[in-house]
Image (spheres, rainbow, N blue to C red):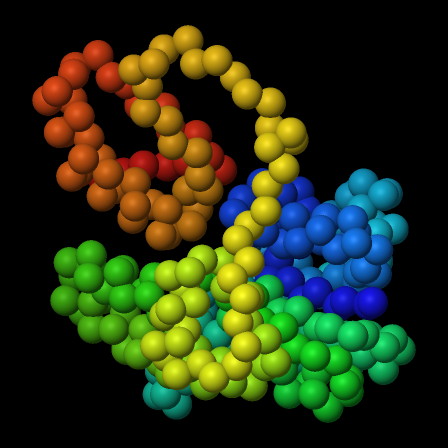
Length: 273
């Protein structure tokens, strides 16, 4: 069996939730003798020197990357707004990636092409045109739900209005792709139910992120009165979650016990509340 995995960012090193999900999926394929090829964006936000990745990983994935400047650009955002298009998605539409994908599909035969996240969905048409492979969509999140929470927590009325429009456009796009694929692999039962509520009629199988506990040796905590957070703090939902915890929950904990401490760990860990 041969699988082409389309990734939003380079899956290695597995140092955040998205990368862990993609990398552990690769490990499960390898353990079942599945041939894997990875075609990925190499974004300006998460740049990786592909030629410096471990040789074993390069050999197992035959990875190829296409550079993408995914910075938010005001002019492009306004143009998408006027056209009623989802700028969240348009930031990941790349002619260079389309050409590379076409070349890979013409030169290889795959049984499955797996889309890692909603933002790889713009390439469904190219896959259908140049391959007979089954398309599997692995939504890492229900994306518009994340943005709905951002709208709810936004105090600035102008920003709130703009975010509400972005959320509506994103939800419309998200719903439009669900029945264009052959199989969906949501990470949680809650996400699967939400997809059903969005009128998804395709087959679904819940596939949580697999973790081999033997890869993470246990450590005895010297201080049991410690609240520990580990997460990528360059991802807005994580920042929002921690802010909520600090504002709403932490005061209740400290009121019970002043000796409890917090330890914040994570890439880009900046907490302003």
